[in-house]
Length: 197
Image (cartoon, rainbow, N blue to C red; front, side):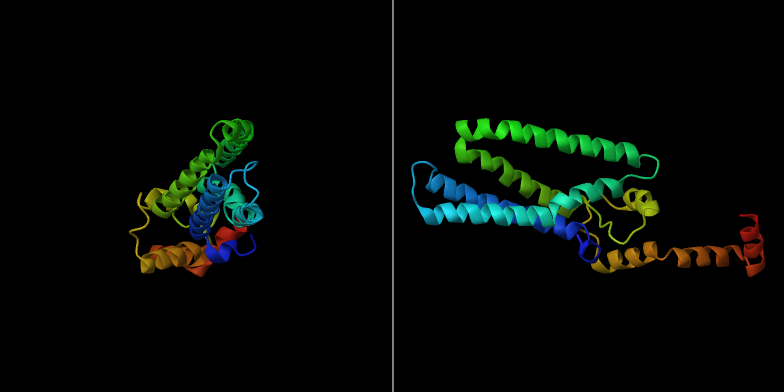
């Protein structure tokens, strides 16, 4: 969380989901090859425990906290409270469903239940790679502009263009100064305007 503004949102979400997917793949292989209750391979048991720890680390460092940051950033000021409320409700509803379904699924289909999580993590990574523009270091007031003017597929944007846009959107003072120069305003009207506030 401390480095989230340095690394951005897209990369941690992409690599976090891919890391989660890898841990699920390895855990699925271990469960399929060494089923619990019938196999006494302690190496496989420890391997599964280590994969669980690695998954928890990967999720807690990337997808877990970002799943709360992204909804708070993508909505404009007018719809933010409702959007975050719906995102929170959806998250809790699906977490409850997973908690209720997992024991039944593990009893009935066993390790095959993990295929759902492998596919979900992979499709999440592809979704974030293709469609999520970088929101790091951008003020909340500019999110509406960002999502209105970014192409649907963000992968095609060149790095130089993304860097240029990041600096342009970050530098609000430069925008105000350019606007004032364009209008031909001087320091005197600005001072009068400040006194009215």
